[in-house]
Figure (cartoon, rainbow, N blue to C red):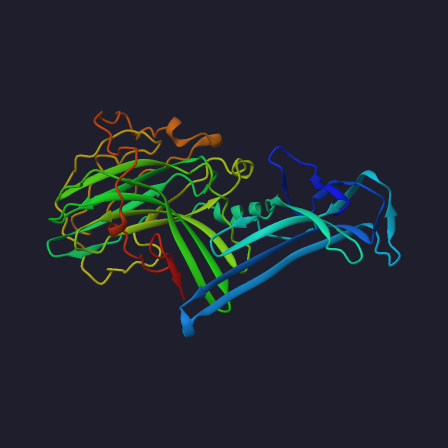
Length: 419
């Protein structure tokens, strides 16, 4: 029977979240009890960070495995140095303190996925001659400081007004959309506004979906999973009509931050706004999102993006088709600021019958970082008419059959893809 009892490893938390980052110290103790005098060959503490991915494809003789590994650091400290003679420790309770330092340099945050992980571990091990070593280990929650650098790339205002025009048997449809932010934190609420002109004879429904995509890379191949975190569906838009619809989507509280600084895996988020049209191509707008911890998101108040053109991420272009002959307006759209801080289209901004285009929605600049809803433009003098809510929050029905694989950057929801 081993004389070593209650071998434990503890570390000191640096903050309330118990997270570590590049350059942080890791301090703690290794504690154990000896039931008798024991000769110990060595006792050490080790910290390391590494990423691994692995998956298999096919079956039988056609089965093929893919794997990749990246090590970011490994530091080791001997609490009892290696000694061929061994060190005799007396019976009783022993407590060894340690202090390591995580190296500087850009490293990805901790992550666990179906086909891979990024793990930062702390391990203590005691070795004795002709005996199995005794050890303990624990994982450290690592949050990369390089997140702030990636936010600075995402935050500049960008985007131009545009629309994707789809040709159908009896008319056409156009859509443009905006979202209030592209850098957000878990628990944040995204406000989305879409302007839709349905000059066709078909009815359609606007749909909104918050997606998470994880991509694993190894040996020149990729394996990806695309998961829908939240879906909402709007009321039916009738034929030959124009509607401005809006909704709010909450980012789940338990989502992990975006991850784009690891060679062998990445975690991406995007918001998809699209029109569900039976037996026709569904125009869509895709907004890339960057999710960061709350303390990082606080550094970027009031940032916004858009509007983005429908199909901006690689959907087929219909520029070769003539512009649709859209009926003359004005259309019955509400005036005044919308419920989510977006100004509704001015009733005087109706469709151009010559070009089939639509004027840009007014985008007021909010002074001092206050939300735009607090400073409506001077030209807006009327409140939006009251009425039943366009969207109903809750558990919508399953939309598996309504989510065909997208074109371009993002694959279809809920499945693995290889390339």
